[in-house]
Length: 110
Image 1 (cartoon, helix red, strand yellow):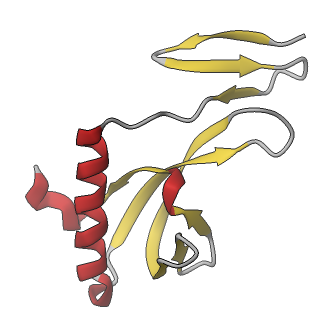
Image 2 (tube, one colour):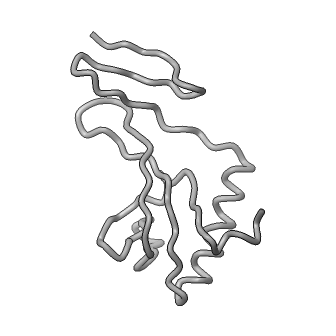
């Protein structure tokens, strides 16, 4: 049995085990533009090793959907070829799954 419903503005799916998943959010042009600007600021600030928080979509390995999770830390490298953000702790975030980036380096955008 699979239950489908809305939580806020997101489609959610709950399976028999009670695990809740959400669908990946489709970003509009304005949100994509803001995220692109943040990526550029991050690239320009890499030498300063700023602490940032990424909100990204992590697909569920066993069923459709996934969850949005946050990772905070310093970026080790940005791999444009593989389209990955590699954090200092080794965590790899697919660029295409990132919903938002927060941190003090983006204060000028507000």
